[in-house]
Image 1 (cartoon, one colour):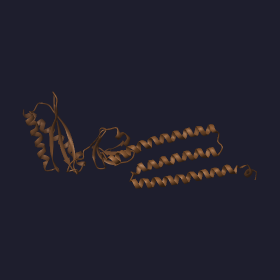
Image 2: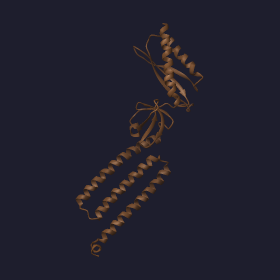
Image 3: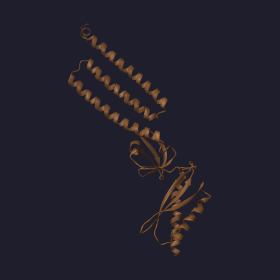
Image 4: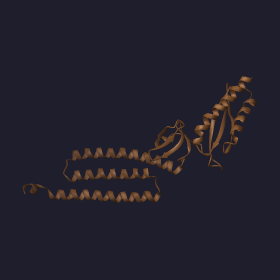
Length: 253
């Protein structure tokens, strides 16, 4: 009986009330956020980030309230509040950063799953897009994950053809030639390669001269495919054929 008599029942009641209020508040806010996520068709990872942040804020607030009701000294309470605030701030910063990046990709749609893209020097086929990263399958058959926050600060090249034939991907090969061949002979060998692939591809390949320097001529050679995986095969194959034709033509001069 002496033990029970020493218990501060008023404090116990307030502790129970505070804990119950925190649980109820967490359930209500989580339920409201889930409805909001479903209504706005928000990406799952973005919604999960919002829910996580909300729960963390409630947890820290409830812990501070319980310590205060339990009679913890003001010095300890202030220290815990500062620590909790820093934790929430750090988590919120990361979550908000991911939220902005995820929403940017979701709203602007610079690329989608299945597109052939180049991002920050990495190119390949988009395999997956989440709140935190985009997974790219590269020509070397490896998967590279790029942070969505990093994507916001980088140039994005999407090779999906912008036009009436939006079901195609247009990939440009950068070619550099010296002046050992005349322009007429050089473009003749490029046309020869085009004729080789004209019937094999959904759209006839094309080329154009992009720039001239004192030591070289620069061309862009465009190939069109329906399946972006074909780029993995065609890119080295066509480069090899052009190189071989160029070397043959030089040998004859």
